[in-house]
Image (cartoon, rainbow, N blue to C red; front, side, top):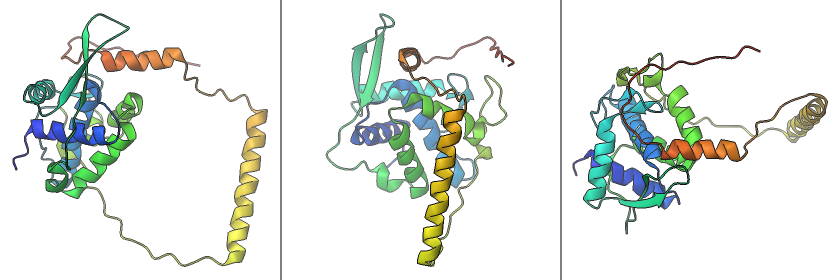
Length: 233
């Protein structure tokens, strides 16, 4: 079976649907980037799609991804769902895919690709914020790049295989001491938290609205300059 970008899109969308998630365009694009990254980690910088990914739109982006998603929709590989946004009058889409059996790429691709990709879809298939945080700050091609730079997948680091270690059972006396130490640490933390002025994050309506707007933003190449201001304090 030839691994085309459209088939890769179908595989990602199918797996997300199996997990109960319907993908927005921005999440689907980022999962395509991760598929290329995980493949590059195994095959010395080579990617599945051969696309020229850039640091453009919410991190890794390329116009070829949007064209491939459109092709996959037109050929019936995935299903698009149109919905109305409460933020504008534009058409917006979500993507899903139902298959009667497992997708062939689940078996064709090496487990070094499918395992981390499927894990990423499980974790962030419905969480744009955490997915963007991961691709921005924890993927090698995004390290030390500037806006509109091409991403270098030769930076991809091969995942180390951790061999299993036989663990000897702990004596009951040591287990009890460990439990006591954990309880003391817990009590100490609770006490210090009550005395401190720790400000916890607020996940209010404004926060959730911002994520919705981000998901519904048009994905397109942009030009210009970006400025980041840091407030001292």
